[in-house]
Length: 632
Image 1: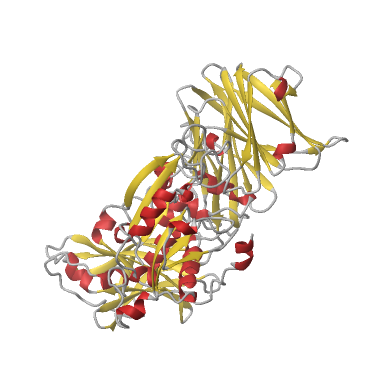
Image 2: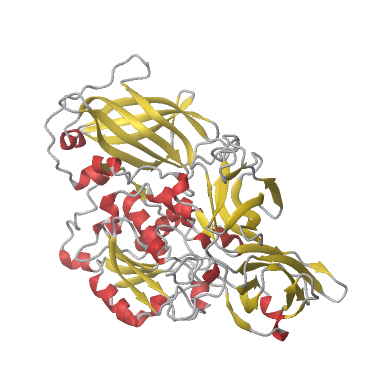
């Protein structure tokens, strides 16, 4: 508590780090590393029914009733989730019978615990009932006071719902849709499909259709779709629900939460690029855009293509930068910078063009506009020719200045003398999303070190990265490595990629080491609205969009460790929502960074405190290794 009071974070504009020009080689384009993924490849998947508990006054208290389809005989898992769940009286039974207190039923096991990092302060009261017959159960929850909560019910994980938003361009009025389907060998037919959208406190229900007219493929193919209402702006939470019958005739329901942002129109790319040799050896590529709102920071990316010595089209490199648009006449220019050494490295020359141009919101990474191709010109006139560069034999040589414009990814400190610089080095210990304060055991890490503290906060990767850089500047550290837990890992990777900071100057070890970091997201990020808020960078789809902007050279600087429970599930509610192995918050497969260095998986450790095994950041043996291997 004392640490929380003493660690008020600096505002995001205080000593903000300088965004730098980022590049990636042609191989990252051809391998798809820096291309937006197919939205269907990153669905949210659920094998459970997630049902709201809607409490109403009864005269003696409050109560909520829910009907739960039980699709087959077996064990029925009921997870009751709420801030006051420990005080609820829970009754249930087949719909034809009067509900009875669950503790009076034979074969009922009760587990009570905390909900975890993504819902701090909430309680899980889980009841496992066995055996139950197929049919419908009536569940009644009674509370002495007004309450809110959810019921997560699961019988058969074989039947799974998958759902995703159909595009990364999340702009109101552009026809954004959400689609879903249920798969499983026991599936008979889906009889009803709906999605409930919410941005504040009110849910808006929209029916989902399998008619081929709602971005849902072909009519009758089992994929259901619904368009997101244009009136929704900001962080959107959607609860998708599909129900029907198995081949046995028994009923089922499956649900999932999906979170994503919806932006108002901010700009339109006009498809032109003004090319100018403003600096020796560097070509400025200023994309033209029509403003639809006030100037704001933007994340701009594009592939550079040209022709090789034989005249064949070939990629040169990928460029990306976080920037503020420049006002030119009645429009904007979004300037990227091309190091001309890339042309020699790739063996490519004129004519040049930009492809897969995309402009994103730096916080959510949602695409605001995109064009497939943009034509290079020399000046304002469309007919003015662009600079000409002859193709040369490919050298294949890539240097640090070509990757980042400042050389900081591989070059150590220069000047100042080694003794003075030693006082400016440190290992930074970084916590994750919504952490309540200090987590890393101080005795496990040696000096020079410092701790990043931003308690009970929900930050985008970009905001988080800037705060890390500001912490180093405030501590007068010109060089630092990072050991990060959970979101601390992706935030460190974002900082290394997009900003000039002491992280890029660190030497003699591993720049970024992470434990249980959701590089590929977690389905639980969509539930964050109950606590510190939804985090769009950590949903399955949002993380994939963010990761498509991280080149291989940056990923190679990361060393990852994954963990999972031993014996009982780490968390009694997330065990119904995640796929094993998992640590109560992040699934093992999502904690691995493609292109990074996977250092191994250990069992017997959970994501945070209050779970069935100790918190993975308290593993002293691993912490000693992290400390010894860290760059500073």
